[in-house]
Structures are given as structure tokens and as C-alpha cells.
Image (cartoon, rainbow, N blue to C red; front, side, top):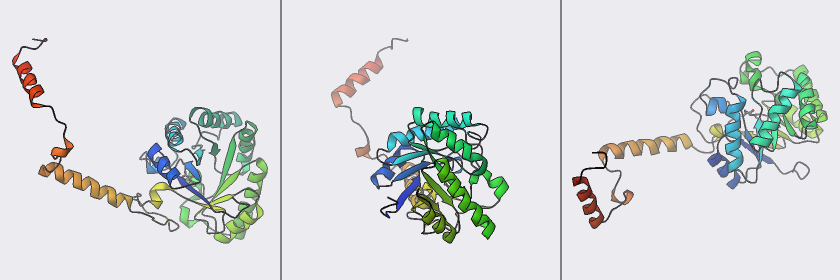
Length: 275
Ligand code: KIV
């Protein structure tokens, strides 16, 4: 797709129905991101998300998606300790949950993790720029400095990750012109999130793009639907009809014939086996 100049479309998803919808919509790549921590598991950050939690979500997405490539996000602490830990958790994602590839954050010391996982035969997507697992060090995602020195570091990191064997890379809140330059230079495709139109593809988080995020959304997010509004309307409608007695109506109920009901009544007049 990069060679043809076709834009690659990627979304996050965390369950089978969402994966099925993404597949039907012709989405190319699904990331089962550790953004699940905030979006579906109720944590304040991505940091508490565990491998076991991710395994459930990745398995569900893999069962729902047939065509898109499913990429499992290695959560914080699941690849930091050693190459062995990184390889073993990547194998779990691929072998037990059915993922096609894994993603990890950062370059520098993480390059050897990428090499180790690729050597084990598993495809790795890189992730540079704003890396949410390091938010405690980096600070607010939209308040990042954009200096020439940082741009150069990102550029070098991108080349290093490609050399280490990544098949693709997320550029997360990288200034547009820097992202475009990295994209022109790399052989592998870049997927931008908040990184402008010069990337090989674009990624948005499920809840953000569908208007299901109750919190503050960063400025690069565009809402393509108001799913939370629809859900609120549906839930309020259900509550109001249950309370008024309008639901369930006759058509929503199941019937037993008169004769069978009479027999049932007769049964009730007999002592039960327990008596
Ligand atoms: O966890 C996630 O969804 C991510 C994307 C924001 C890149 O890592």
C-alpha cells in the first residue's frame, strides 16, 4: 500500500463486535491498544493494564476480525525487563490470542527487544513520538516541545526501529513536517495519530472517533459519529418505557396455548414433589 500510495486505515478496537464492524467497514489494521486501560477498563492511565487483561481483549478482537491485520499492544511492564520477557509475551499474543503482530513503545533500549521478537518470527510495529506508557516522564500529550534536536532524535529513532526489523511504525503527535520527512525516508509504512497528512496511514482510537469518549479529547481527534449520544438516547428510552409500562408490549412476549396453561394451572393445584 505504501508503494502504491494507498492510505492505510487503522483503528483501535477492544472487543469482537467492534472488530466485526471495523472489518465490515474495510479497515486495514486493528490495534488492540493498551488505551483499553482508559477506554474500557476504567483505569486513569494505561500503566495498570496487565497481559492477562490484554489477552482477553486481543482474543475477542481476533475472533471478530477476519480480514484486518490485528496488532496486539504489549502493555507497560510486559517487555521492559528482558528480551525473554518480551518474546514470551509476544508469543502469548500470537499463539494463544491469535494476533498477527505486536506493538511496543520507544526506541533506544527497546531496539534490542524489537530484534529479539523479530528473531522469534513475530512482526513488530514500532511507536515513537508521544508514548503514553512514558506519560509520567513526558507530561501532557499536547504540551510536548517541538525542537530541532527532538525532531532529529525522532528521525534517528525511526530509522533505528526500521533497521531493527519493525514492519511499520506509529508516529504519535509528531509535528506534521517531521512526520512527512520520516515517512519519505522510511521503506516501511508510518501510521500517524495526530501527526498530519504526510504519513502512510492514519489511526484513531475507537472511542475518540466515534464520539464515545466522555473526557477531553486532543485536538487531532475528529468525531465521525455521536455513538455516546445514541447510546444515551437508547438507554433513556428503555428506562422511560419500562417505567411507564410501554415495554414490553405484547409483541415482545412469548405465548403458551390456553390448553397448556390450564394444565399448568392444574399442576399448581397439586402438591409438588418437594412437598
Ligand atoms: O494504546 C493505543 O491505543 C496506542 C495508540 C494511541 C497508538 O498505543
